[in-house]
Image 1 (tube, rainbow, N blue to C red):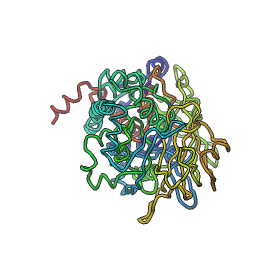
Image 2: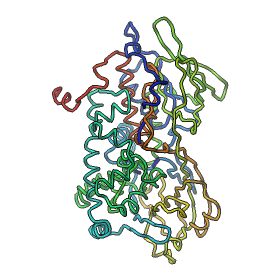
Image 3: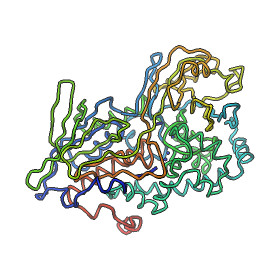
Image 4: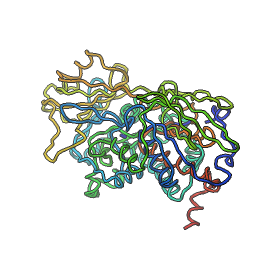
Amino acid sequence: MGCSLLPLFVAVLAARFVVADPEEHGPVDGAPPSKIAVVGAGIGGSATAHFLRQHFGPEVQVDVFEKGEVGGRLATVTVNHNDYESGGSIIHSLNLHMQEFVKQLGLKYRRNVAGKMAVFNGEEVILEETDWYLLDLFRLWWRYGISFIRLQMWVEEIMEKFMRIYKYQAHGYAFSSVEELLDSLGGSGFINMTRRPLSDSLLELGVSQRFIDEVIAPVMRINYGQNVSIPAFVGQLSGKMQAAVEEEVKGRKERTREEKRCRVESRRGRQGAVSLAGAQNNLWAVEGGNKLVCSGLLKMASANLLEAQVNSISPIHSGEGLQYQLSFTTATGTASELYDIVVLATPLQASVGSGVQFQGFTPPFDELPGSYHSTVATIVHGYLNTSFFGFPDPRLFPFASVLTTDTPDLFFNSVASVCPVNISAGFRRKQPQEAGVYKVFSPQLLEKSQLKTLFRSYYSVQVTEWQAYPRYSSSQRLPPVELHPNLYYLNGIEWAGSAMEMSSVAAKNIALLAYHRWNRQTDMVDQRDLVHRIKTEL
C-alpha cells in the first residue's frame, strides 16, 4: 500500500490449476469475443479494463464487477473537511504505466511539501535526515561504511533489467506465468531472488548487519509491515530503494524542475530499502487522490461498472466453445451472465474473503495457498507526543515522519505527518506544537493507552484495517496467471511484489496474453531471448 518499489509462487498449484492447450483458447472461426468480465476495480482491475479495450477494440463489452469502492486499496478518509490517503500513497518516477495513466487522464501531480525523516529504535533517534545532503551522506558513510554504495549498485543492476518489461510489452509480448515474466527479465537470478530472504542476499553483497537493522528493516516495516526475511526480489523493488539509488546517481543538484514537481511527502509505498539522504525525491502522488486513476481508467475504457459481489464462476461448454457463467448479487438481487473471457483482479486467498466460488471445473480448484498480512492505518488528528521520541519541546522536533526498527516493544511501524490529497498554494505542514493530521501504521489496532503514548491529545481517530500485502515467505511459490482457458488471475503478481505499478504491469500482461490466446498467436507468448529478438525487429 503506499512508498515505496518487493516474493514469489507456482509448482504446488500446477497439478490443480490446469491450463488447456493454447489452441483451445480462441474460437475456431476467429470471431472476436463478445463480452469480457473483470472482477475487481482496484488499480489492477481498472488497468486491465483499459488495456483490454486497447487490444480488443471498441466493440467488445467490458463489464467490471466491484463489491466495494472503486480503487480498492487506493482509498481516502476525510478529516476536518480534507481527504487523506489511507491506502496506496506514493508512486515512483520509474513507474511508467502509472505515469502514462496520469498523462492520458489529464490528472496532476500533487505538490510536494518538504519534511524530514528519522529512524527510532524505541529509546532514541538513531538516524535522521538533515537539510544538508553532504552531511547526510557523510553520516551514512561514518555509521555504515560503504553498505549504501553496495546497495546502490545492486538495486541499479536489478532495476535496469526490470525496466525491460516496458519494452517487451510495447512490442506486444506476453507471459503465461509470473515465472516466465521474471525469467525473461533477469533469468534464473530473478527466480532465485524470490526464494531467498532479503537479509541473506544483502549480507552476501557485503551490506553490514547494522545497515540492515537500522535502514533496511525500518523501510520493510513501513512498506510491508514485515521484516527482512521477506524474499529478496520483493525487498529490492521498493520505491524507496529505487529513489535512493537514483538520488545517489543523479545528485540533488542535477534534479530538473519537473522531477521536483513530482515529489510527494509520504515515504510509504511501493517496497524496498533506502538511504535517508533524499529517499523521497523520486516519489509522487496524484492531486485529488491516487484512486482517481482507477475511476478515470474505467471511464476511458468505456467499461460497465457493476456494483456487485461475484458469487461463483462456472465453465459452460457449447460445442467447441467455452464460456464462463458469473453469478452475482447486486443491491436488487441475484443474476448471472455469460462471458468469453474472465479476469480475476482480486486476491483469492481464504484470508481475504473474495467470496468467489469455482463450480463445475475438472479437476476442482483448490484454495490458493498463503495468506495476506494485516496492516492497520490509523489517521489521527491531534498533537504528537514528541517527548516519546526524546524531544520534550515539540518546537525542536524537526521530523515529518519517523520509521522504527524491528524492536519487540514497539507497537507501531511508523508515524508521519500527512498532507491532504488536495494541496492549495498557501498550504504549509503543521508544526509539531500544532494539531496536525498523522498516519500511523501498526500491525494491530492501537489501544487507547498506545494512542495516548504517541499523542499528547487528539480530536479524532479513523482506522482502516487492510489486508494490504501477501504474508511473504521465501518458501512459497507463485500463483498461476492462467487458471483455465480464457480465465486469468492478476493478483499472483503480488507475490513477486505488491505495488500499484506491479499490478499495472500484470494488467498489461494479461490483456496481451488474453488477446494472443484468443487469436492463437503463440509466437507472442513466452518467447525466449527477447532482448536480441527486439533488436533484430528494429
